[in-house]
Image 1 (spheres, rainbow, N blue to C red):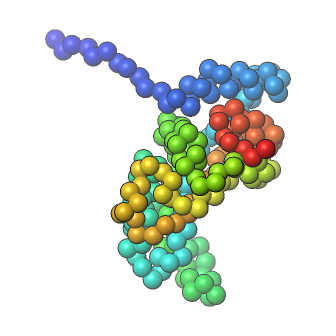
Image 2 (image 1 turned 90 degrees about the vertical axis):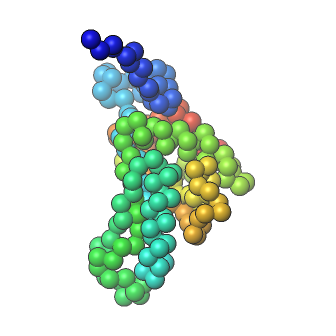
Length: 189
């Protein structure tokens, strides 16, 4: 008869903080009638645009690999939706990479972003508190991928920036701002 192993379930730190503390505080602050109304983070989209990839295909492959290291999930190459003559871009050419994170992977990435990567930014004074889109979603631009400890500075092809879009279920920017602030987002004062 096979022995049963003790199942130790792992929950990301930020997810535990959300469930134990943040959800209750938001419920009190906004006077929700149901726990289903409490805003939560639905997904995080990390993307990189590489216009130089038109000339150098190795650059895009390296970017996909780095994005995979940063997020812990395989990145997909994105293609141009339409041709733009001024940028010498044709429809269907690979010009970027992106990853959509959900569930535990999303909370792990956000935890590393907020507690490890952002404090490593030179002269960091906080992130823009007005980068919401009017529907409770937040966009953050990072100028260098080297702020993440997973990236080895000696092995990168090119220093590039990345975009982080945090999609929440909050109907208003005020509710989303409160959610992100309670999770540890360092907004400028």
